[in-house]
Length: 437
Image (tube, rainbow, N blue to C red; front, top):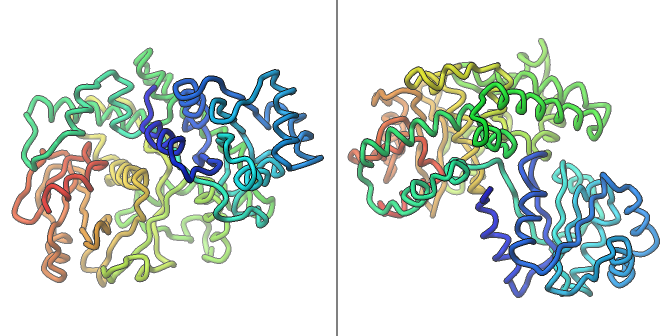
């Protein structure tokens, strides 16, 4: 399964200022597969160590954190000669061994000729707690669920994925390609981007099996909550997690604490929400009523929306029927368009974009606003094909943006200063905006 992160990993390998790499990402997004596949392509051999499956490995780091001593012990443990620049060392589930995590700084300082990648579940949570871990001694990359383009590549639709990658003009796609892409996109909304679910879809095309896999992943997340979360916030984490679908089913999708529990207040649940953010399981989209640069300076910390890491898992949490795929664009309208909005938040987050949405005195509301190259672009997500856009019009009249963006199932088109962008091209938004400018 080809992952786009391979390009970033290759750039890391070739970078003269390379440091030990930490690959972050939610459980089961494919971190181990990506590192092993990259190692097989780019190195003579791989020295793989899993601290969860082999607890005895932790003892190797308890005596000394000197790279020389660690490398000697790892070579004996793996029966493999570890060669600088030719062996990729992988520390998997490194959160189970804080000493191994801390050893990365010493590799950076005195043995940086050895190429080391570390990965693990809940690394964001672990790093937030590890106060002794120095900033600036490691490189970071994030791995997300498969993007829609990676989904196409998994389906062996290589030419179609390449076609999207090479769009240079803002003009409608040939209708036959547009309809084909919409069909694949509807499948993606149901399947999501978790590698195991996508693999099952590609192999057997069995939507019942896909749903079982997604349910198992959700069950594994709950086990992670119980195993890794502080006991004093465990119940609150579960409560927040459980209400995300119902929060998104509301018209404005703003997170309301009283839906979690009657009479609940922010201070009771903000730590639980932050834990889920650091675990990589949810995206937090902040509200702003002042679209000025930089957007992060004008966000409202108390008003936000929460989206799941994967749109397929959101469908699984709500028992979304596979029949929605075959009945026109019905899947786009499910619980007030929450699926497509979750997808947009997911696609923009994969580009490392900070997410915001805009409201104005209960008169108008935009699903997202995007800061890109010193410009602010308003985004309205349409679950149907209607071109009515009251909020987009109010925003445009008030702030006169260079380009306003409408995301929907309609074909690509520039209508005055409104960019009609099909949902399957959200990941290419920055590229499209460059073409316009």
